[in-house]
Length: 140
Image (cartoon, rainbow, N blue to C red):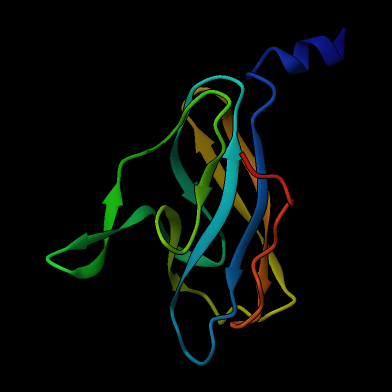
């Protein structure tokens, strides 16, 4: 009965895979976090937080007049059964005012807040600047 009641609080099936960021070489005080999110039902990522950063935002890369820049987002849409990739060329979670540099080989928790699925805790792996990003090997 307890297992049944625990499952009633949030829709099941939302998956977050391969959460990662790069080593913040030197004194860089910000970092971008990437991952793949899949949900069997439509949802929206509405917020994120991490104890390693003073501020956390949802952002995207965009091109305006030939120059790339970042734009703040209120939410990231997660369509049903369509993997949404947060990657260096687009959507990402931005960590500002880092408490200390992020070093390759470390990891840290990141809380993601979804409109329907609620809060999800993921572990973010810190990789070396030239290392290839982690991958589940699945593509759609």
